[in-house]
Amino acid sequence: LFLANAAVDAEITPKLRGTLNANFMAFPHTQILETLLEQSPIQHKIGLDLGMSVRWRPWLNDNVIFNAGAAALLPAAGFRNMFNDQTLFSSFVELRLAY
Image (cartoon, rainbow, N blue to C red; front, side):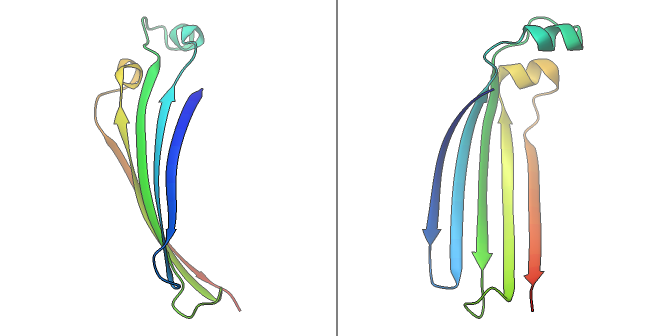
């Protein structure tokens, strides 16, 4: 897998931190995928993965931490060859409580 990444991690306030992330993904070789999936040709480019998240610590300690984020995969030709051309989305929410 070839992966190129760019990211920004910013402390917006002492309680709030944000992250932006972008990944470009491609296969250097696709012959094994073509054999496995019995499908030819499969292009090299997978797509662009974009994500963001926020982390909130309401009392400036690690006893209560709230994390939330979302990501999207914008498919390129290789992903479309194997699956479909729909943009894929995912999200998460996490509440961490520690004593």
